Length: 416
Image 1: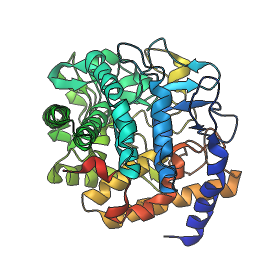
Image 2: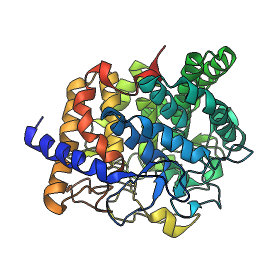
Image 3: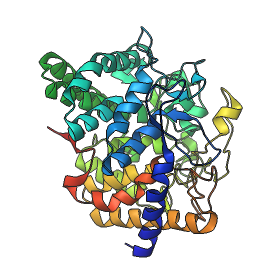
Image 4: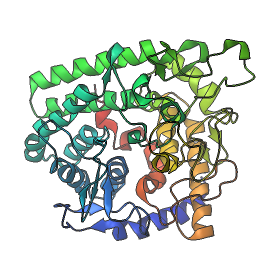
């Protein structure tokens, strides 16, 4: 650890955290966290941003932001279980056409909140609504093979992920949603157990086991030692170009995207497969490892770029899908996810090195522009978009603390 880098980043996080706290507002009946302290993304809550921010606030003694986020989102839940992902403090739910359902983090947040506070009464009161939100996924996002897919590519949060952006969304089974829902099922099962809901506990345990098996059976691409999206039209993995005559020269790693990495964070992979994927891709500078963290797309992909807006899509809203580029730049959540994957699968030294790279990147950003941004050029470390950004970046200083297995706030999700 470079202690000077850590001090710069930690002090900045401690400085901005109070600025991010907001009282209840017109369309947000409970307090909330702003994901920036600037003009960018101002005035709204975003499910997975705010979820990861709540993790950092819980470390600082304020676990109630898990509860506030869930309460604000479920306040607008409809009779079919739809729960909005983005809510503006004045205008209410946003991106309702097509419907932007809350990303799969609410069960995990509820379990972490309960584990931190022991607030059984609140958890009991919201459990049926949380089940209803999960049911909406099962009704509207399911695919063959007992798996799930995003109905609109940018709703994953990986806004222009190449594998969903360049194909019609309904034909692609991406990896990330299935890993996130596996974690949601695990969290739901443990939450049900703590609430003495034996039937729900058994149901969610079964669903988690079934989904994990499907991910490893269908989405593990042994030929490439990686998880891979699956194309329902071709009935093949969508990892590279279909023309096998191209060999390794063109398109061989075209769709090796960050969305393929999430099962490592979710601990879905067995040890042998995880080790091979980590060594071949995560710790390889020809693929995901950058001097500044983890790239959002393999450097060996033909689509790899570090533009602010990224490659445009073939389908959908071009303005929406070129925003927040996930086709190369470093994003701190990817560092965070792979940091924990490396720890779990026995790469502790490499995990520490990855944390060092990310903290140095953020310290350099503060020195250069006085704040974090949402992403960074993977080859130069240059800050890219949205100065004054906070969001999940505020978890960065906790990685050193979390190297002690007993201190990670996510541990309850992985209870036996």
